[in-house]
Image (cartoon, rainbow, N blue to C red; front, top):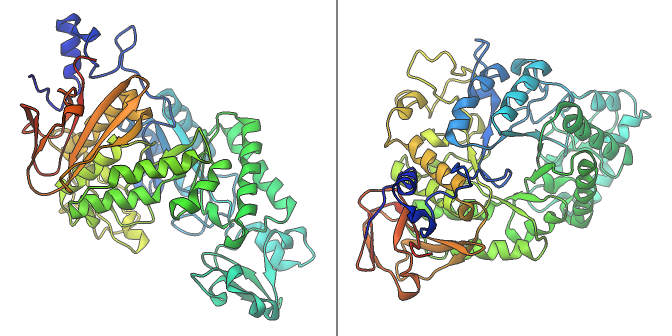
Amino acid sequence: MKIYSNNYRLCFTILAISALFIAVYSCTSVVENDEPISPDWPHAVTYEIFVHAFADGSGDGIGDFQGLTSKLDYLADLGIKGLWLMPIHPSPSYHKYDVIDYREIHPDYGTMDDFQLFLSEAHARDIRVVIDFVVNHSGRDHPWFQKALADTTSPYFDFYIWENEDDIESLTVEYTGPDTDNVRRWNEVEELGMYYYSYFWAGMPDLNYDNPAVRDTIYDIGRFWLEDIGVDGFRLDAARHIFPEHREEDIHAFWEEFRAEMEKVNPEVYLVGEVWSDTETVKPYLTGLPALFNFDMGYAMMEAAETGIGSGLAAKHAGIRDAYQSVADDFIDATFLTNHDQNRVMSVLDDDENKARVAASLLLTMPGAPYIYYGEEIGMRGMKPDPNIREPILWTEEPDEMRSRWIEPEYTTDETVVPVSVQLEDEQSLLHHYKRLIALRNSEPVLTLGEINPMESTYEELVVFRRTYHDNSLLVVHNVSGGAIEKNITSTLQAYDSFIYQSDDAIELTDSTLTLPAQSSAVLYQSGQ
């Protein structure tokens, strides 16, 4: 039995030498002109970018849209079909989650013209763009809040949530939330003799969504970015905190209304929400937010890669998708390993590249619409505090003209991380591992759109599942452990007799026995299908 290499392009050799492609499942799904089918976004792979740290095109040491535009070919070559940009609006903070103008671009990043050129160039490469829309709160320096401070009779005073000291002391934990206390969330304004509410910190006062004027204003801002500027959607920050947590029905109703208003402008608008909680808490949000980040699976995939124990992982994902299905038929499962609020993959996995590779393999072969945090593909390091998980990406060896200098890196340095330019020249690099997996996923509707059918295994180190879409299916097997494993292919799975992908050339399939080296992955198809 022939075992194909891990390079998906070998499929084209098969197609060229024989009419066998009619009988073979197909290494890459093809249309009439033999071009690979590109999955429809937003089901394809999206890449999260902190513009501040990505690429400096102006030479001032801070990432910007001029630099980002120059790197679009790199992202297209990586196989990325969507970009999520962390906040891009004017703000006094480096992270920009305390917005002071929702209709402008931060001057460090360039002008609105720079952004629109970037957007046009991204669309020309079939890359969609989602921007962070921070609607739970504004910045303390936003004109709305400053007008509220200056005049309690101003209509902007009711844009925020205010209480006096006596009322705050009488509030119950149901209102304030179980994970904090009144002191943290209520901030005194001495000259007014009142306190304003801020879920996260005093610099980001929460907006008052009981006020219809606030809702209308936010909806109008959303319409501006969709209709006037042309972005493809929004990542909705802190989506669970629009109202206090005990008012979840009101939160769900708000997002349903928000979605309806945005779809009036663009029926295909993409909305992905950050609801950082367990599956049971997350799933009701699907009525308003068609895509939600799957934190449960992010933790589970990272744990499997870290511990070398994968049993139950596929069943867990299937259970989450069943839970989502009970709420919405057309949900988008936004999967990821870690993001800008979490320690980086490589650092969590003790700088073990083999573990990072198998984590990437899990993410990109399981169901969902995967997100990759910038730099994970080259093994960037980073541990909290937050600035150190948002360090500059390394493009070339020093001198690196495009490298952001916004912070002196502690974790991602020239001594710890191999830059993009060097990894691009090395077919065995982590970057090429990501490229091969993304290319495989982009060419296979089964991997992009298929469901997951968990398969039992006697080895706790193995993650075994089938991906099915219409009449087609693939068998996926991951060895997440540090040792080699031989697995007997049961009679029900023996039809999967050929490789479409191998992460390691040492993977073998002989006499119904699959041999997997440490931290390796294989995807098999049925040659007779």
